[in-house]
Image (cartoon, rainbow, N blue to C red; front, side, top):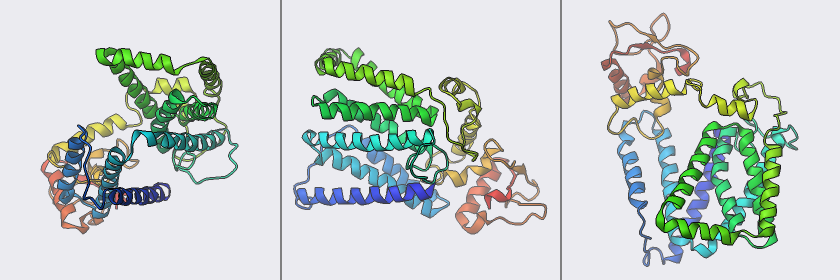
Length: 360
């Protein structure tokens, strides 16, 4: 997925760097800098502190550098947004979000119905410009609430139409991605936020009062029309053809089958993968294996739950290095001393594996 993610990350980092520069200029290069007090700052700094402390445990320094850069960039974006973005400037961002979401949703819906005017490389349709539909769903569950907020706060017809259509099409596109985790995530988030607002004595009255004041007859008609279109468009079957590894299977043919598959026990080996990851955590309980290094540290723990080739047990008489193939050739896992020490810790747990060539 690097062909899709890396350019987007580069663009994101450049934009964050420009916003940091603007913030520094606004505060006279930090001389008049005053951070907004927030209960979120301490958890954020603890998160990045733990990531930095776990860096020496990594087995791949480039992966760790990329992951740390990404985390630091997002924390910087949080600080800039909290300190340099007044509420009066929030509305242009909501408009931008709704317009961008509308374009992305249109492209994804056209791909779903095999009507897209351009062929964009993808690992799994319908992905719009994200390279894979799950990544598109991750974007949608963040953009949909913001478009809904613009709909609630808009009074002008232009704002209502843009936010209403954008929210509608992004919701339809989210259904088309068949991404069950995103469905559960946005449903749980809306349920928790709505539940807290209704159950908290100090929030209930102003919350309900604000909702009543934001709705009028034209907005209600538009809302009902969007709901009717959503009910009409969401169940339509996919028309694109995909024979790749990440194609829709029989569990994701329709909405009902996709929802029903959530309750299946194994979930394509994910539950087993999570259980085996607990073994990895027990071997590295304090600081883990370093940011971005899970994908390289996990394979010896997999036991063929997610991999196509089974990882067999090696000879107990010579467990100090992993074996590959009938001749017992040493693998490239031990290009660094750090990797060797990590694999010998697996030996201490009495797990002796022979790795297939897929992991070289």
